[in-house]
Picture 1 (cartoon, one colour):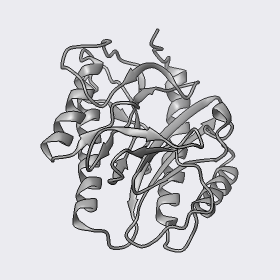
Picture 2 (cartoon, rainbow, N blue to C red):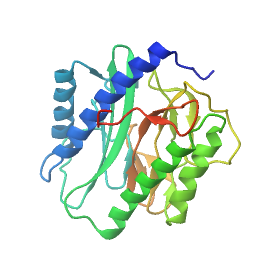
Picture 3 (cartoon, rainbow, N blue to C red):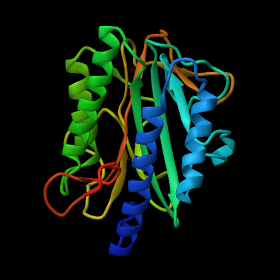
Picture 4 (tube, rainbow, N blue to C red):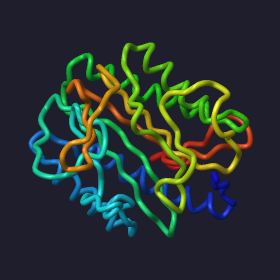
Length: 252
């Protein structure tokens, strides 16, 4: 069953999502060549402590980091550690926080210094696909409309959408119904209703959509080792018009 949030729950979601977005912006701005993914994760954890919130990821099904940090051909769920970030890398940061019982979940991919043209285009298309998915998250539409919007933007640019992982509902739990694939058929799937809060998160690849999970049981990597980009917003389905982006770092 897909939860419909009450007014009070939506207020709680707004708080958690605002904090999550502000911390993600700080973490993205802190990315520098020479630092490790563990350094970046430690910075994120310190910012969470400073804001009085907890990581929604740390300990989830045994995950060992406060954030997921994935490099280059890693799609999602990269475990922070001793990997060094270099100029020209793509760094995907997925960050979720729990604040007063509610979760805000968002992600971005950072270009470290000067990146090659195709990598820059990949990130730009990922962001455009996210915007299209958010625009499709309207009351009366269906989950398939979101996936179709993401897929259309991505494939028109010559990239592929990951099919083995997807977006999801979010609220008091990190993963709620419904699942939100980044591909789909318009008019298919569960109907979107006002009060639903959804994590829409395109994961797109330069090459094949096929992926594999590394031996650590978490990190997802492109099978052909070409680069991947990931971005995400938590949104609220509104009574009319496009969804409200809750993970917005700029105060309204």
